[in-house]
Length: 213
Ligand code: AP5
Image (tube, rainbow, N blue to C red; front, side):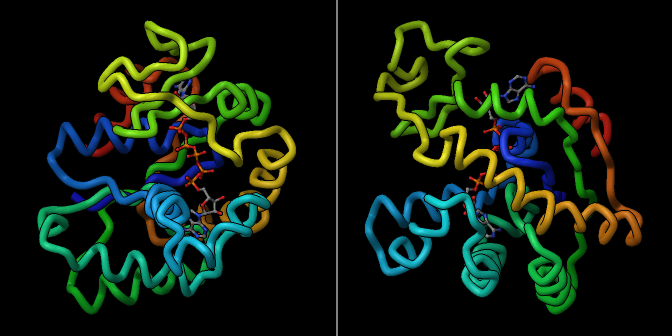
């Protein structure tokens, strides 16, 4: 199964991608996670990406495309994958289409999460992530048992540097101008499935599973 999860920052793409990856035993490929890891390692890629991410801008298309091209050819993607946060521009979507065509593969579904912008801001300003296993929590709606500590592995929780209100607003603006046109792009290709992203994480997960089964 090959899926694309589409939706604005905070729509729940990462949360649902992790659950889908576990259920279907296929990898979640998050360009955001790959880039954050590179920034933390201070690698060449990380140094290139850092300023864009800090400003809530997209990294240049060539960087994101190259990351995905390499990744989807790896062995663990042979049975499928979940793209979380890619593509984000028409150019990225076209290049992805070309790469998949070369590989004689197709995307099965593009799941588009629609969530009210006010709700997105609440979700993102309260999000806390585990520095070790990547598990996600929320100050109010999904608090860890012990404040600041991951329930799963006991490591410290942190707040992403781009989860402040000013940068969140910028990210939402960039989503509207750069990524929203992808809905039409995939609608025309017949594989867009839109979900009202309201409801609990488990409710949304059931809806996603129903769409892809
Ligand atoms: P990225 O890491 O992809 O961030 P994003 O798209 O802004 O998405 P988020 O991770 O913030 O949100 P999400 O939809 O995954 O929601 P989540 O499940 O975490 O990208 C970061 C940056 O990297 C970009 O700004 C850009 O610079 C760069 N980048 C990445 N990919 C790129 C690309 N392809 N091209 C160019 N640049 C790229 O949930 C959010 C919160 O809500 C959590 O606290 C969660 O617990 C909570 N939550 C989830 N679901 C629910 C629910 N149903 N009800 C209540 N709360 C919920």
